Image (cartoon, rainbow, N blue to C red; front, side):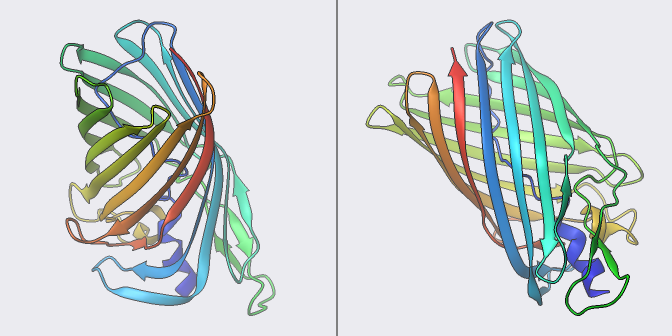
Length: 282
């Protein structure tokens, strides 16, 4: 039962967190980032918000490619591809594979005051099952399900508005997201705020704050621990992006969870650290 409960966070851990904004790419403009992220925790918040120390770590790492392309001056194509994601506990083998793919487009509703609306499909790459052998304690034949795909098709809708100061060195964005889930899971929504400041002409520092809530009570309580049903949280983070050349950028970020806006429920609590390299063509 312990391992069954611990798996609740697996499908919530996003290998890369990208801010939402009201801007779209210029026609022919592109942005591609390759990133590596890591997470480790043994602190688990149950569906009623109780904190449990599980006694052993859950660990997850991922290699992800995120891309944007300006199809027109108002339409930007978006793709998020977790090329490889691995999960394990300190007492199990590591298992992994390609995680769920998100693909969609963002449309500029207004360009004078940047406002955009995006729709993305999250396509499952598996059936929600990926078993790891237990090593400690040794139990012949015992396995734990550590899926990297939840096996369900999602549709994300995002409305975002942004504003940049005349200097071009400071900006802010606010967004709301709605996630339509299938397979009988309850829908989710997210709200977020992002603030960015450019320093010494080559470095951006970007702070983020957001929440996730469920639209309704758990509709499938018997599988909620595996697939994140009933998960809520407040998340915050900081990203640094440094220009290496006119088109190459180095990125580093961390994100963590808190309970000061939305309570932490059905989630592991620890920081995710990410490093990456990005290419941008304007």
